[in-house]
Image (cartoon, rainbow, N blue to C red; front, side, top):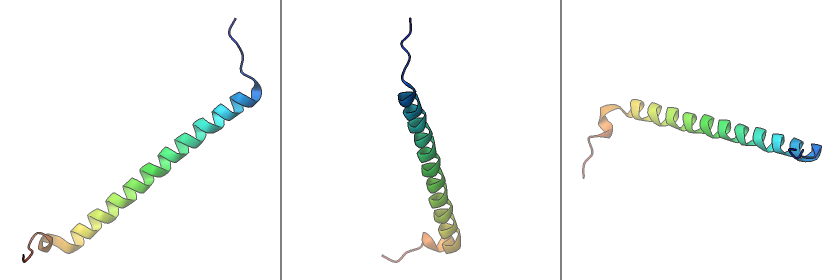
Length: 54
């Protein structure tokens, strides 16, 4: 027969699974925010960003 995990271990597994999903969601939100700020910066600078004196 399949061995049952104790209730404490099942709760801990569920907690770790939820924490991992939450961490991934936060990382994706942070990456999206960085991309938005980068895009806004490039748009505000316009084509002059490519014209630089060396």
